[in-house]
Length: 164
Image (cartoon, rainbow, N blue to C red; front, side, top):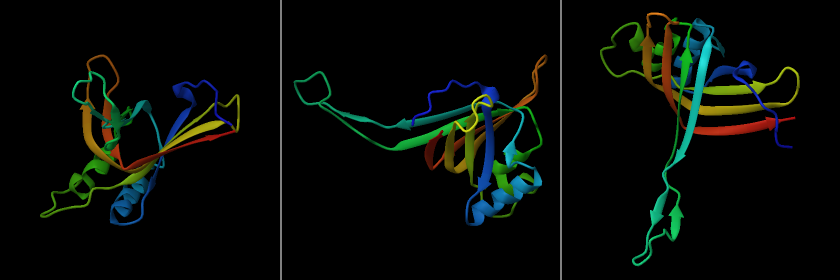
């Protein structure tokens, strides 16, 4: 049965989990050290999935006769008010604390976005991003507003689940 409920950001939560392998171990160490299993103080989350569609146009026709699917890209961002360096460490790995002399592993992890209205328990929507890596980190210090960090990310794949 499809989920037909309406939600607000107050109904949401974000959790991180590690992958297998060296990149996952690096992520798990950061998750454990910064208590990032549940990501807190998030103000905004954006997830965008795009497909590079290619239109085939025949000579003499103004409209495309076929649309061919191309590469799929999954990107997004998180705005967070809790500044503790955890998301920056997810971008830089070991290079966040010291400058390694050679190449270094960037942490990779899974991110689950859960939406559940407490007034309707058991009905929820889960979006899970797999193989996530942080691609960009920003730090904003405004004059009259909250200090925020923004982390942009890319993911290898995405799954969606509705439970009722």
